Amino acid sequence: MKKLLLVTALLFPVFQTTAQLSWQNPHLSGERFNDIQFVSPSVGWVVGDVGTLLKTVDGGGTWIKLNVGICENISEVHFLNVNEGWILGEGKLYHTINGGNTWSFFPVLSYNHIARMNMVSSTVWFVGCEGGLLLTTDGGNTWELKNTSISTTFAFANKRKGWQIAPFGGVKYTTDGGVNWVTQASGVSENILDICIIDSNEVWMSGVSGLIHTTNAGTNWTINQSSRTIIGAPLIFTSDCQFLDSNLGWAISPIYECIIITTDGGASWTKKTVVGNKVFGFDPNKAFIIGNKLLQTTDGANSFTNELNPVSEADLYSVSFSD
Image (tube, rainbow, N blue to C red; front, side):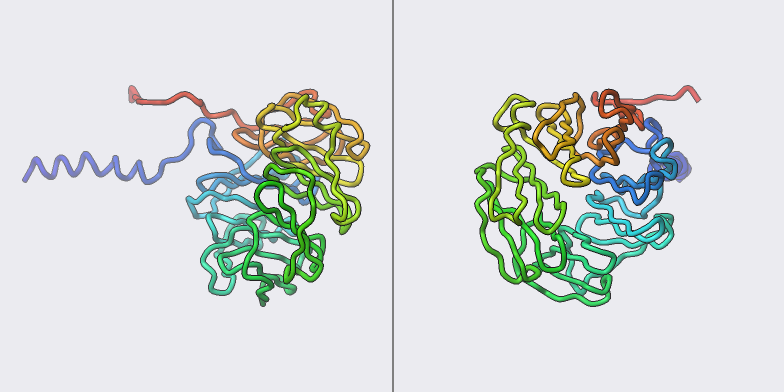
């Protein structure tokens, strides 16, 4: 009996410690980052795997870790202002009204899995779930089922006009809020990965084939050849693109480990070396790159600051402490 008590006493602190494991180096996170958003040049959030949520109030100079209360991977972050926002974690939406300090589950009718959230305005949102495409026009209080089928990647310019992607370069377009869709000729046969809407007529898409562009709501799509030329390949594997307006835009290629920047609407590009999967830009000089790291540039991607020390990519097998 004494031996049993001794073993129990020795194991109890181990279980207590294991339940409170947290990253020691890097201190804030060693997880992969999946999405980033800023509501002003100063205030922004980045989300990642295993419930990771970081916030900055000084433009990325310093970051603090916020506790969401979940261990699931967080794929999306959407804030309306410095206080109110939503995150999407493993099929569930969570809501905050105090800048991310506390979170509560945000139900969408009785649906169990939310695949994507697209906020058109403060009150108009589209949500993709196992039931199909849902629309709310009052900030999530009431919902309308628009279609029983929807791709996991879609985006809307307003509550009527939107696009979704299909396999092998497929593009579909709606003008009635997602009830009916027509197929558009994208000009590419490889998978499209991301949609960036400038306005109801001008849209960029990025994917395995690189960048395609329309200025007439998809009646005609053109392959952006200059981006292929600057990277030097016909399949440039752009995972993400962002345009602030018709002229200024970024696209990132994880395969070729580079970011390309245009200030003339894609007529020409500059190429800079960086590793990441997603870009969030402010102006021609300042942007953030996320993926396995959180990087910032303030000089047009000529150099990057690693906001967080990366976790080792080597396999770790043991640890010991002298006291």
